[in-house]
Length: 328
Image (cartoon, rainbow, N blue to C red; front, top):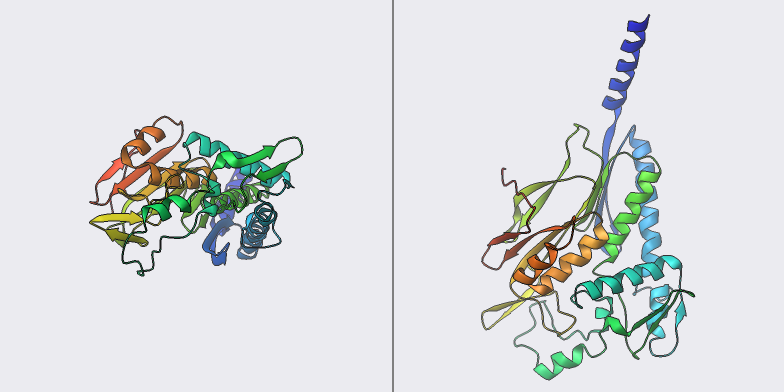
């Protein structure tokens, strides 16, 4: 009887595992391509979980969008230099973390980058560099130190008239983290949320192995130069292999240093591994601005954060604990 019971339990567990399905849905959210993958018992169950993730990402977009005039972020921007705005605690804490990241990166990351005048164009229309005075003027209203936060009342005030904040360098990562958290709370054991390259994973693939992420070869974007396992973490890549200009032999990225107004140079791809996509998202942008040496030195001082950097000649640089599997 006991043997029959054990056999029944093992059969039940085996059949349950075999019945599981990996379901992926691709859609446009937050103006970007999202891929949401979950492992569930049935396809309808998986699609129900994906619907939950989509609803959560949509909710976050309505909260942080600077394009939606009804969002709290837009309300903050409209009242720059006029008055402080009371916001939801969620938005307040996101802005607070962003300001702390600005301090940590010495301004290489700065959500007030949205105040920057758009004088650089990466659509092929630029024939010469902007004038130095125009570049300097483009960042006059940028500066995280002018974001005033009141923790008792959850208010946000932008000191300079015309100043703006935006979450382009952190928002998709934050949304991916929140959707992952929600799905885990609903019992989803494994999955991936890929927010246009801002990727966070949890659990294992159906065969029991870690999820693997392909790192794009910036010298040939149709190929990957490495496959890296991701376990309960996030990976984000920032690259300038599609949007850049070249003047006097120097390649200028579409990622602009918010402190100077000049585009980043030297790095063409920065991949960051971190516990959360929000952090990886912000740090990938920051390292791009910092450059190879400063970026590596910075990352090597932060626990549980690693990076892979590639320069314009295709040379690969890694932080201290990275191991790259280049096997195809």
